[in-house]
Image (cartoon, rainbow, N blue to C red; front, side, top):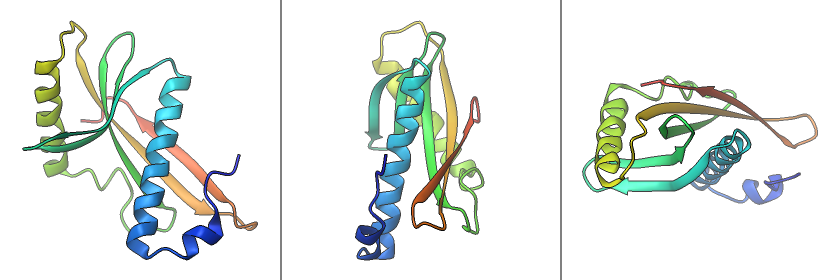
Length: 136
């Protein structure tokens, strides 16, 4: 299944291209989670003080907060490396705010999904997922 048209992406600015690939990475992670039996509760949930959580999902054992980082294969900083102490702090606090509003006995867990995209010889994009549970 072809999700991104290479010719369409060539017309975008680098910032627009990065945003488009980031949304596609998030979509792919949400699909991955659904395939593992997770229920997606929210996408791009925002707290005014601590920022955005890309995906909030429910598993049988946890409420899972997922930070998705999509990078090109030749990026200087990997997706995992991009989750620094400041991002971890903000994500943990946003998750705490969300959990206060949610009436559940399930404990929270924060994961990181590193999505790497590369262009194959045929011009099609090749997507790889490195999913790290309890990353923060």
